[in-house]
Structure formats: C-alpha cells, structure tokens
Image (cartoon, rainbow, N blue to C red; front, top):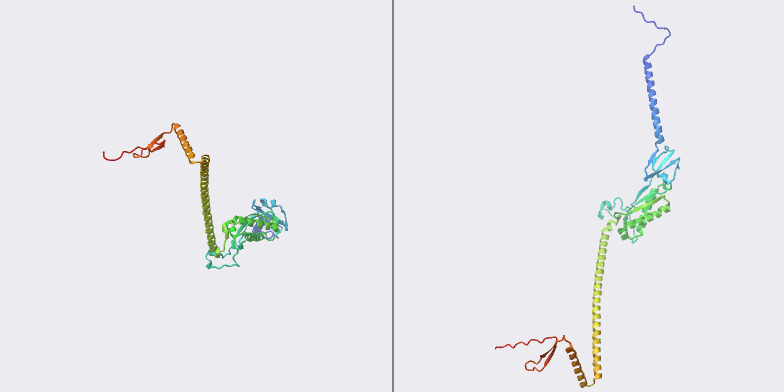
Length: 366
C-alpha cells in the first residue's frame, strides 16, 4: 500500500492560477496608467500651445486679446514677423489682420445675369434696372463701372475694433466713390481716360476714409478700359453716333487744312502780286521821271530857243557834237551805206558798229 503525503495542519491551500492572472492584470494596469499619463501630458502641452501662431513678414498681423483686453496696439508689434504665444480660448483670443487687401466695387456693374452672360443680343433678356447696377455721368449718360481698391492698415486697433466690419464699410466707401466720381465727369472723359477717372475715385475714397477714421490708407485704385462700358441696349447706337461724330471731326479737320492751304496760296499769290505791283510802280515812277525829265528838257529848249529856226540850228549843233564824240572813239566804226539803191544813190545811211549788208548779185541770165 502506498502512503499518502502528510500535510501540515492549519496550512491554507494555494491557487497558483489566480495569482498569475492577478499579477498580469496589475502589470497591464500599470502600463495603461503610464500611457494615460503620457497622453494627458501631450494633451496638456497641446492645449497650452494650441493658440500659438506665426505671422508672415509684411503681409499680415495679429492682435492678442486676453480676457477681451488687447495686449498691444503698437502697429510695428502687430505686424512684426515671428511666432506669437497665446493661451487657449477663452483666456486669450487672436484677431488676425491682413496688412494689405483689395476691395472690388461691382455696384455699378452688370448683375449676374446681365450682358456679360447673354452677350450683345438684347432680345435674350430685357433691361432690369432693379438688378443691373449703373452710374450717371455729369452729362446725364448711363454707364456701367467697376473698380478695385487696395488699402493698407495704418491703425490696427481702430481697424479691428472701431467698426463691427471695417471691410464692409470700405466696400461702401468704394461704391460711393465710383458713383460720385462718375457724376463729376462726362462720359467721353471716363471712356478716354480711365486712369484719370481712377485718380478721382481714389481722391474721393481718401476723403471718406479720413472722415470715418477707418484706420486705413488707400494705396491705389484701378479702373481699366474693360471696367467701363455702356449699357448693351444703347452701345450700338452710341458707337454709331461716336463714329459719325468722329467722321465729322475728320471732315472739319480736312476742311480746315484745305482752307489753310488756300489761304497760304492766296497769301503767296498776294505776295507775288504785290512784288509785281511794286516792280510796275517802280518802272512807272522811273518812266514818269524819265518822261518828266525829257519834257523839262524840251521845255528848257523851247524857252531858250523860241523860234523854229533857232531850235533847228540847236538840234543840228547837237547832232554834230554827238557825231564828233562818236568819231573820236576809236572802238566805234562808222559805215555810210547808200539807202536809195541804184536809182537814187545820193541818200546815205549811217551805221555804227554794224557792217553794211552784202549786196546780192542780181539774178538773171548772163
């Protein structure tokens, strides 16, 4: 017979399986608590730095509010580039501000279903004054306009907290400036010089920005040629009118040029006529003086030689004296040529420096 082992009295029985499970659970709980602590630490760090942000240089800025109170209002610090620390909301709150931003005005432009979509065919949709925007020019013309304004924040605190929505106010400022500037200029001025019109819009916008103290400054206003249009129902008629007016101006210019050429020609002819007239007057004066001198000479001769005989003798004397002066000149040759021919050879003709013509032989039979 085998003997049973002897067990000590009052000794509890040990459950080895339950003890191993308890140890495993304890280790698992310890690991879970470690991971949970790590997660809590990570979440705590994240919550602390969750409102931390960075600011790009020269493009944006931010104002940190702590329990609703601005931490800084200095412009340079608001737009200073770098990382900004802020406590999580509701302790801290950040207000981001763009340093420069565009605003576009479409209040005087076509509506969404206007001529931009339907083209130039007015039969597809009638004019809808309740939808399409427009502006009135100084000469009473209807025109569609749009403009873009670039503004820069000069006072961040006033811009962010002076108005509930400063950008919406700037939108109204630009719309008002476009309408006002259009009312101060004629249609042709706006169409031909959109950049000058843009300057007028910018000047009006500057005045309103200063008046309402929006904390911004207007950098520039842009209005291009494509931003100015006539209502599509009147565009063709106005273009035809402008073309006719342009042709009329060209015709007037051509007529003025032709008139100038005619006046120049007349002035030239008048100058030539005046020259001829002056020459004729000079010749007339010279001839008159010569005739007067000759008449005076005849008068003196008549007074000195009152009778015909004395005057004849005086004339013969003058003739002989002239012939003597001629004869004394060695360069002068004198020819005596018969004037009467064979039948009357007694008449002689005096030729000075001119040889007598050769006598042709009479033609006839030998």
